[in-house]
Image: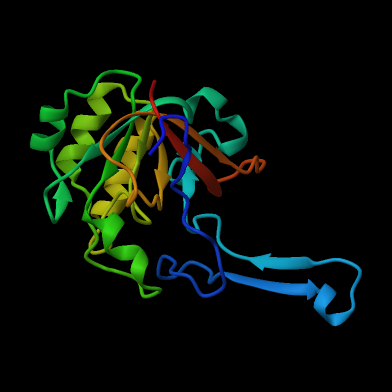
Length: 214
């Protein structure tokens, strides 16, 4: 792959795609259609703010936290590192310690999710997520952004997902969830990831792309 080639790590949005249980389903309906004689194509979208590839601001779990419209653009634009996780169940501190994560980094975790979960529209309950111990560790590193390759940083079962979100967001870490890193090798990249600028937004779908660092 050429160094200058951008890699789209966004999951395409479409009607019926997988979503977090209990969140709104995704529907995209063509309300004006040139194939039916209309002068242009216009679609209506109905979806939750945490659909597909999306960002979580602190406001998602912290009542007084900043929303998406308050996010500094530098949070999700700049150098990033893709770290491959081998553990098949969760991201644990021993792999993070080996990665030697530094303050202000943007880190994206590639797990077995990337080659497994996006092949189906059924929700995968046993996806690889961040363990509470790893969340505690990340909160102490001073990273500014964490990205994962399924719909949540925390697991589906139990209450750990809430605790993990709280720990990361309270530490000022912005989150990108729902990445597709199947075509990405570990290493340094340039990241551009921009959510919609929703006033007081608790989340938003985003377009995320990577390019190998020069």
